[in-house]
Length: 623
Image (cartoon, rainbow, N blue to C red; front, top):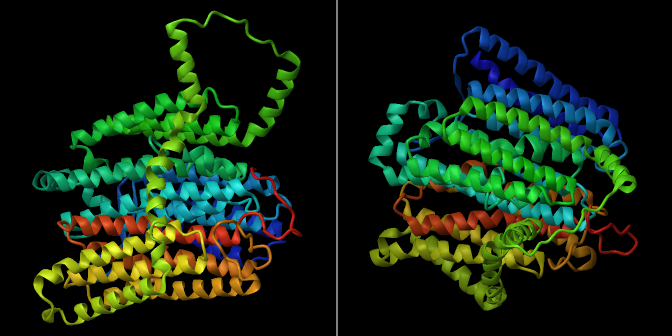
């Protein structure tokens, strides 16, 4: 029975590949492939669950394939099936199938018909990878796929300003969660000295011994898991991204942000519960997160004028309650709650246009204003203040932007001197010196050699900060990201004797090829009108869709998405940072937060948005 688990990954994968090969005008074939692929998956999972229940519901685990193996590290794909997987798999397959059928008619003759259905299949592949995952590495592959699918579907109406802008906002929050998950994996490597599986985490005795011996490290892993789950499920302080994600088609909002993707934080907490169950502080933090999110999200939902925003915050409030149920150990209740919330929000989003039409009709003909009452009391003043805060969504978006991203951009803008020829020459000399130190370590004084890795990682971070804040030529921003990655790789190679040339090759093999291809694409675009500045949207995907698609693939490969060896290289890179190298891990983690955001921002600015040439149709700024 364990051998059957892999087919729930292969089925959507082959469906996605076939869908990519079909011409975009063949609507019935494209939708038929998606519906039949998801339908076969649904039938298969229902049959598997029936046989699984008849065989007394055993926990299934299979080590599928080893991706990379040395004496110190083994990276492998592992599939796992239990009650949690069964519920999430059945709910996910049913809802995705219903949404695919609905979308066949809802998006008829839409320009992005093919893009939608291929992205939905890719999403379904990523979703299945997450819920069938048997270790953090497998889960993270699906986690990353879901992140890029989110951006593509939010920016579905790519000729409009707000969908693209909000897609980048959502991706920035997702990226924070991604890095927290990478840090949890990094510390787990050092804590367990192996790639721990979820089956092993269920061994309570083994987990208790490790937590007792390494209390602070265990707390760090659990905290990173909590932040990753909160970011993915839009819990405080990350709640503001979910209504912004509703800029995409209603059907993608239903399957992504109403039902499935937004509940993956719940799945992560359920899957890792045996690990953090005995850490009291984490349980308190989860309960507090759920309580405050539930109260604030409910207050916001009650006063919003947009139906999508109301549904989004209502879903967030319910997920906050599910967080509390998980922390208190009511897992069966949490699974029932998840199922009900997922189906309800998907239904609400799909019927909201019709319901809104009836509501407006009723309001026009039957509106009666409320009678004025005396409001000059302390209680009413408090209620009105609460009302105004809720109208402003408690300024959550402003707080995140002001305290998180503004300081990063401010630092990046102060680094304009990196664009001078003298700075480029100096950085090149420093890098060559670092390569010499790596090759001839014995000839370098020990005190100097110990400082060099931190210097190189700091320089790498500064280069990526500059790329993130760059408003000028896109080629400069792309070059800064390349330089930052090279310095980060060098900093880790210097400090770790086990970080061999094969590891460096594994990491750079995918990113270097992607970097070169991306650079060529940008040069090609620049040759058309000599202007690829990042202070505006250019919308070149209309005139040059093939270049745009190739550049998107190069961006994903450059960022280390799971179709290049760089994805494995990132795991190897982090595993070679020792747990006592706090400064190095901080610089490296911050760099990887900003790398993907910087390069996806370049893609969005150059290829998406309203086309800058006047002979193209002008879209509204909002969808």
